Image (cartoon, rainbow, N blue to C red; front, side, top):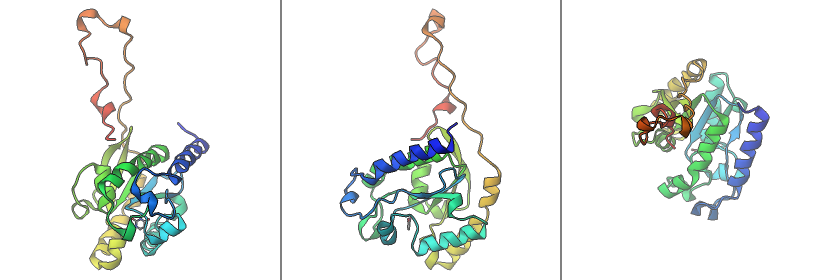
Length: 232
Ligand code: URA
């Protein structure tokens, strides 16, 4: 178990790496790397798509209209930004707010996995299609998945994944806003369930000397499948 101080130090290290990142062409057009913000010890994490113009200027996620809606929905369930961690699939703004490209997601995802690994959230709300598809490693769209929680293995841990409509989409579509609000209001119930059952830790491999010669078949002493389920 890491202490809060260790977690913050490690997260700062990832931030230091990200803030000078040149892993994809977006570094040429961004103003600021938007690493993520909030509580490093949060049980609840939100993952959006990519910074927009306001975020790019300020270096913080969800500071525009979509962010105001996110704040309002958080307040409705008795939370605010200091209770949660908010970040995006991409840490740099795509020009003209175009969709993230596969090469950009590929280059950037390591920062997200490291954030998940360090913060150890119990519940991850994916906001919209891009984060939902990435964290589920599956192309199913958000309109089929929103409001349906499922346990997923991300890195070494199981988390409660809870896809939601993106607040920017909900701003302009009243029916989506109602769905987002209804889904959002179930977050406290998911948090109250605590962490999902975790995959079994790998059994230590036996010393070579301990293996009976006749039974030491290749692969026989590999980890239990559940311990290897890290998707990424
Ligand atoms: N939309 C996002 O997906 N992320 C932000 O940070 C802002 C708007």
